[in-house]
Amino acid sequence: MINTKDCDWLAEHGLELSALYPNKWIAVRDGEVIGVGDTVAQAHDQALRRRPERDFILEQINLDVDIPHVE
Image 1 (cartoon, rainbow, N blue to C red):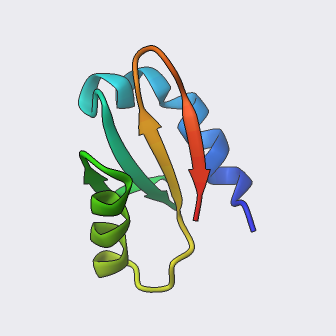
Image 2 (cartoon, one colour; image 1 turned 180 degrees about the vertical axis):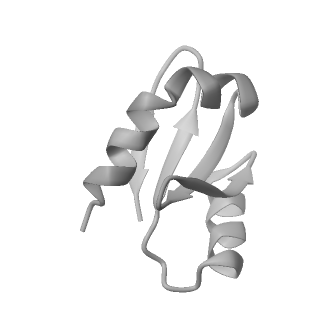
């Protein structure tokens, strides 16, 4: 199930995240970046190590295109 609070948080912090994580994948849970990687797999694996319950959002931070992916 999609966590709408995290979706809202991503929308509100989009510019900040673009500056911090350009062209990276991030995993977000409870308004916190819990995984970062060059690939979705890297961000996913890092997030699982921090939050094994698997309830997080994966998003690609791309300055040209925004492609959300929900775990």
